[in-house]
Image (cartoon, rainbow, N blue to C red; front, side):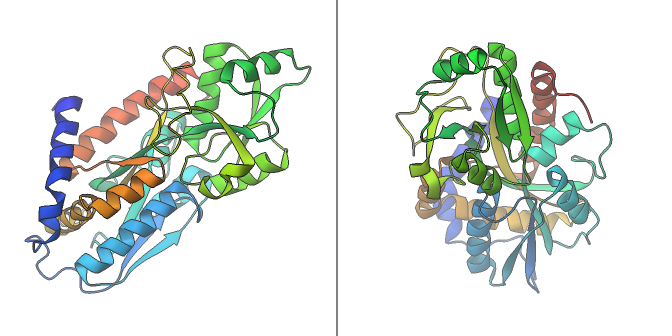
Length: 324
């Protein structure tokens, strides 16, 4: 299935979501019988955590069981991914994660303690979201070009922080496209990087809009990494709009279960999750954090992940990130 057809069917499903929400889920015969645990590979306050908690709240109402969220950050998400991959395939341990574990890591790491495609049963998409090129509010630059001009004239390299692989690739790709230097400072998550940006300990950070909602008055956003502007910052142009050719980096958030999880259980969770993503309140929530819904069937998500792995291999090569 082509990408355009697949996303077309996904948004058709989104339009039908309100109908699903009022219907019984045929696949949920006898499931769940106990609380469901969702593991998130990033700290509280990240976009993935924010989305996971909203999805958990919705699933709790639809499935009639408690749905818990456990944050397990560290090692670019590999700690959490390994935990989920080794969990019982019964539907009671889920993984809400991003392109970091399921596209970027396979492109960067020579060896991983999990296989993004073989060790997980895809459930469905949740959202797509771009990153922001953010500087301290006192930085004199107002455009990407102004910042790069200052960086090239500086006697010491500027620094950029990254709370995930998406942020790292965003910075390295920009350096490669515009030919200037910035030293990468990795963080365990977005909140810590934002704290250092505001304090002036780093020059640039690439947060997602959701993670930065509470500090927008303390930072200045010069550009959006993705292919389109975000609804929460309509006046901020994309980096590509500012003349950086072939530049586009965006993240996805999706749900997975351990491989071997029964298909009816996967179908049950997918139907319930997609019903929630079709509700106007959920759509409004995602838009309020600078994201858009990404509704998919398990089969569509499986194809999408395979394509994303290949795309991130290209991004990593262009950004000249060494394999680990």
